[in-house]
Amino acid sequence: EAGVTQFPSHSVIEKGQTVTLRCDPISGHDNLYWYRRVMGKEIKFLLHFVKESKQDESGMPNNRFLAERTGGTYSTLKVQPAELEDSGVYFCASSRIGYTGELFFGEGSRLTVL
Amino acid sequence: QKEVEQNSGPLSVPEGAIASLNCTYSDRGSQSFFWYRQYSGKSPELIMFIYSNGDKEDGRFTAQLNKASQYVSLLIRDSQPSDSATYLCAVNSGVTGGGNKLTFGTGTQLKVEL
Image 1 (cartoon, rainbow over the protein chains, first blue to last red):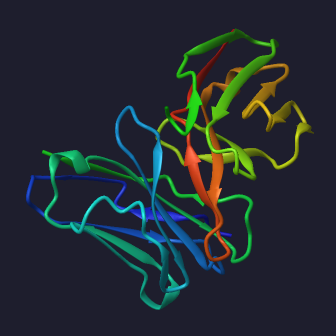
Image 2 (image 1 turned 60 degrees about the horizontal axis):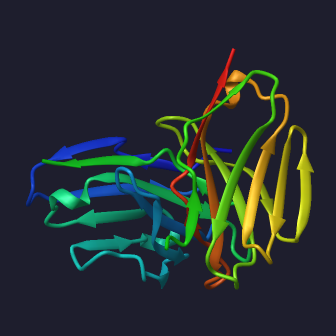
């Protein structure tokens, strides 16, 4: 069984540009989460999808961030326009519906905004 | 006060010793507690989770939970160099729509020395 995959693994962009991160969850996992780790800080929750619906987006920093999950499969997280403080590692995680145990994490997408 | 606090380390222990990793949390309503291990540049992977007060053992790992003191720990017996990693404590801060919203600590770096 393939794990959670994220693309790209590393992106370097200029301030003001746009970046789109993609996450493919484990097949059959209806829960999909985005988390972010800014350097020196803890991993923080951004939002939670159940299938294609946003269940909780209380962690999204501002309206420069847009997450989508087309057809309840893969998800994208777009940052537009990117700011310096958006630099960090963006993790995606997935789990089965109704399951309150383990979240399966991807390796993360490292975003560097110059 | 941070919601989940961990000593950042590094915690250095000799090979074969017991490593003790500690975590405190602020939300008394938290229900479940997780220990993730993360190697540099890799995805966090679940080591143990615990819901009830007391000890839970799995191989060389023992998780301990004391809800009255809002304290959770992870003991690693017979530490091996391959255990060298960052250990993340995570607390379930809300079950939304059949999922799991985790609040993480900043992690403790463990170094097991030969």
